[in-house]
Structures are given as structure tokens and as C-alpha cells.
Length: 87
Image (cartoon, rainbow, N blue to C red; front, side):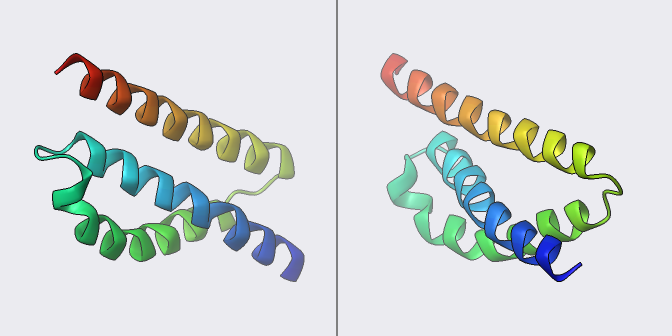
């Protein structure tokens, strides 16, 4: 259990930062106007994602959910970059 807890905390911190940064890039005014809000939101999102992942019962589902979340965060970054280049 302690190893899973440490793995969860270490793997969800970059995920929460990526999600908050991706949403900050999509907000009007760009990331420069919403960077503080994204930084403040990153810690509660990190705790929420880690708590939700600790409730997952099997290791395969844990890895699948984590990979899916990282894929969604990458897609959010690519979408924000594409929208930024289009406008």
C-alpha cells in the first residue's frame, strides 16, 4: 500500500499541472492572464485525482486510467496549441 500511494502521488502531480496549464492556455487572454489561477487550482486537482486513483481496485485499471488521463492532457495541449495558432 505505501508503494502504491507514493506511485500515485508522483504520477498525478505532473498530470494535474498539465491539465491546469492546458485549461489556462484555452482561457481568453492566454496563459499569462490565468497562470496564478492555474497554479492555485493545481494542488486541489492533484489531491482529487490522487484520491480518485487510490480508489481504483486493480493495477491494470489503475494503469489504464492513468494512461487515459495523460492522453487526454496531451490532447488538451495539442488542442490549445492548435487553437492558439488558428486565432
